[in-house]
Image (cartoon, rainbow, N blue to C red):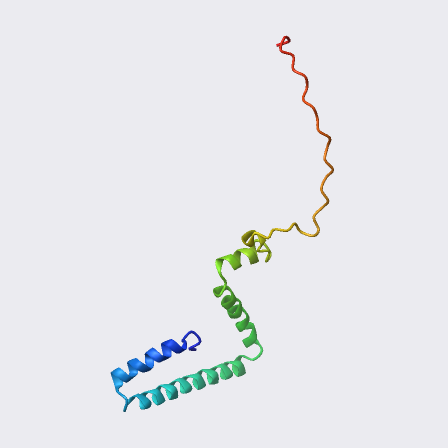
Length: 123
């Protein structure tokens, strides 16, 4: 839930809490917040278990599209292009282009053909 909150942000929250609430009420506020978060997490996990029990095996079928959607939400435009248009080959973006290993051998080159002679009197 707080995966994006780093130590710097936590320190700022504690300092703001000290200034706003004061040192005597801050521990109680932290305790109340942690209890409320724990209760919410327990409530949500209980709801998930209840849904899983009520719906049965179809619950996993409902979760599959959501997990696919979550994968797409985390995808960058570059990753989306390489996955869907280039089948995962990102050599276009990295500059490390290598021909596919199943490429046909190059056709033999023809010998150089000399141009036809040009007669200025004939024209």
